[in-house]
Length: 300
Image (cartoon, rainbow, N blue to C red):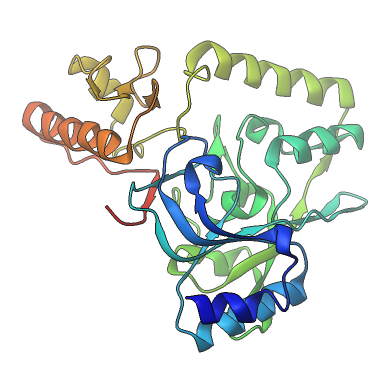
């Protein structure tokens, strides 16, 4: 790993490459062991160099957005974590070109100033555009696929490709990027003309609903489990009486059964123990298999 690091520091600014970096500092759960290397990427050229060097040293890479939908295990991450910081925003009529590192709430607010509608329901999602595309994130009946025209990404060889909406193979909380085909660089979104005051009103209504119904006062990774096929997972967890179930610092929220929260000093082991208990109880009571929405990475 040291040889790889020595090669990387020739191309990456010292402040943008960190060794033994605690992932708890970079995830909304505030949980996670150390990454061997944590690199913040600002330029496409930097990304191409890192991908090439990592490949030559056979060092694995994990791409991080805003760290809002992941649980990093307590043993940390072997290899390189890349945080993508592409912040481009260009507006041409109703088409917006946006960098993968732009945070969704900021983008939605920015589009309101242009009187562009289409992102109001996504406003409260705390992730980045790249993360949203990767998992076809959504809220209040909307998903990113509804406004996405194209995505531009860099493959592992450093080549740049652009794919259409259809080529993403979108489904519920899924896109082709879950197969690790490359690193998302930017996307084009098709929005529609609207009235700024009406757009902002819908954004504020959605945010107020989140604050009222979700446990935003505690660190979490958002909704822990996927919606079931023909059932609402959070409703089953609630009916099973699991609200408040706790292992260590990890608890099924008493406010919303779909969230596992960090009540203080929770470990990934605590969270996964709550997950397994929840899965087991739901299977025993309702004969349903429930699946995680959050991504679990790293080593025990």
